[in-house]
Image (tube, rainbow, N blue to C red; front, side, top):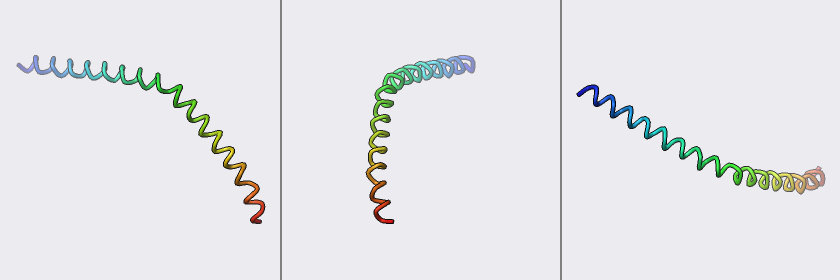
Length: 60
C-alpha cells in the first residue's frame, strides 16, 4: 500500500509538470504583446519626461 501511495504522488507531480508546461506556453504567447505594450508605455514615459523638462527649467 505504501508503494501505491508513492506512485500516486509521482503521478500527481507529473500532471503538475504538464499543467506548468502548458501555462508556460500560454505565458510565452502573451510575451510579445506584453513587450510591445512595455515599449509603448516606455515611449509614453519619455514624452511625459520631455514635457516636464521645460516646466522644471521654468520653475528654476
